[in-house]
Length: 141
View 1 (spheres, rainbow, N blue to C red):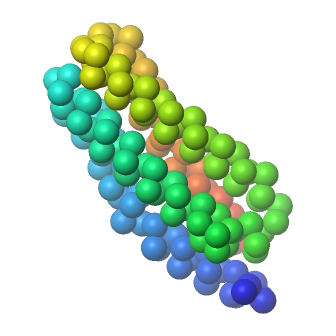
View 2 (tube, rainbow, N blue to C red):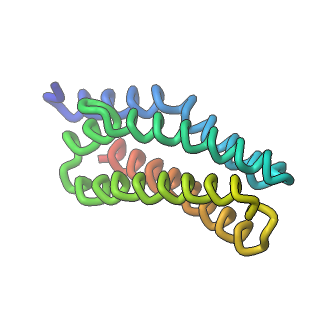
């Protein structure tokens, strides 16, 4: 239970640190998708791996008593923004799954597919950046 500002900051920092290996894995997959997914088979495989990694990662962020709960308990004014991040998880997962299915059907070589993949990568990077900004706000409070 968070009973002081110091307890809140410690809880947030611990949750952030515990998730760092997952953040590194997500960024690595995004880099690989962007730079090295040259075949439909590679793209499909990487999108499958990304979907699995994101599902696990997003669940960890949303665990009761976890990352988002730690921030929300300490900085209640951030609850709406945290809710937006949680909502965005569903959109990012469904987009990843949709692109994976389309890659499986052979669309990965199409220019439109690549543009949508690049958009997804950008949205995921922006999502992760927003999370880190919220952590900094919470820890500075």
